[in-house]
Image 1 (cartoon, rainbow over the protein chains, first blue to last red):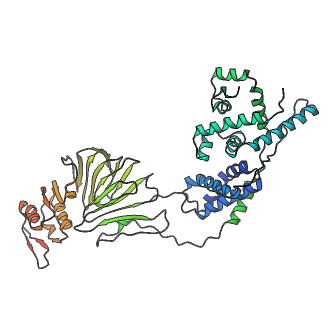
Image 2: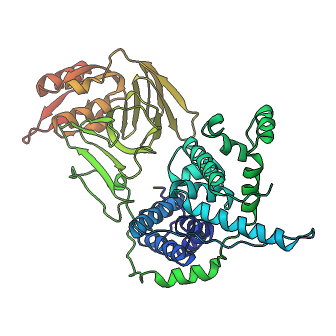
Image 3: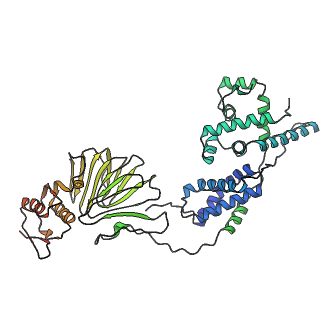
Length: 172
Length: 303
């Protein structure tokens, strides 16, 4: 009788699953909604659901379960909300002298980029951010979203096209 | 200008998957600088901070308090002495652990389908049990007695018995696991038989293998399906004790005096519709004397 050797119902195992995936799940929703508090809440709720269903979810399926649950919860919650994504940006290390104009232009560019990302469709945005920020490969993104790798690449391509079009002020 | 590229070009560029020439041409294009600026700017993006431990604590606090659950160990069905014929039993601990079982009593056969459409026919006094959960991924069941399997193509299909394990990929075969008699016949495809302490054996269509006590045999069969499916039992060099026990199962009768049976092998067959004829075929052919007692049970006479 071999069932999962690690049962998610055991607190130790549950905590490990949490430490492994909580950030990924939270980021995933953050990319969708742009609100870190909301993302955190949804992530925690997904883990609560995991706990409630721990007897039915084998250890190996926990990640898939979490992403499925959080996707559904998000969809139900924010179906008609307009989303504005605001992500923090750090200043690049300025090793070379940067004139005020340079810095200002950079800030403007970042703002435009930010707006352009907001204007992407949710489908394009999440693929784009998962790849550019989370550094996830297309294959993994395909797995998370439940679509083909080709579909991921198409969305990525479209996202880039769209961003380039949207942004007006490029450095020469 | 826009649709020079195919619909995944930019994705492939970002992943470093463009061919040399493609890349060089792209780098010369007007838009290249714009795309590069976008990529560069993305490198400086930072996510809002995330404190794992803090989040873990918050989440743990949200969890509903667990009521102490009584853990019932699921007892393997085959550890019960198969005395009386047992109706289908469901152990319900949780969906994960619940086992489904099918039982054929004496003088009975039972046919049923497994969750993937594979078909099982149980001979008399036999039982199959398995977990429905996760069936498609791991098709593993336990057998007590004898059954004919017609397996759909799919993941490895395993039949476990006390004596050994039979693994197949999609085929038709029979496994008999009775006291002191283990028999596997492959009717279609191929099966792998694993018995403790012995190297595993592969059987192809028409090949069979049996162990009765110390005696091992590999042999061939002509028929396409087991005879008992057509209500006839056939034996080819099988210890007489097994034949007598099969008589008991098929006719639901008690036969006493089995201890007087000599160590002989029987080759022949009997139909399931006529007891007298069957007794004649088995006992008279083997020169075994018997009587019937008041209850209609058969009593073998000591020689």
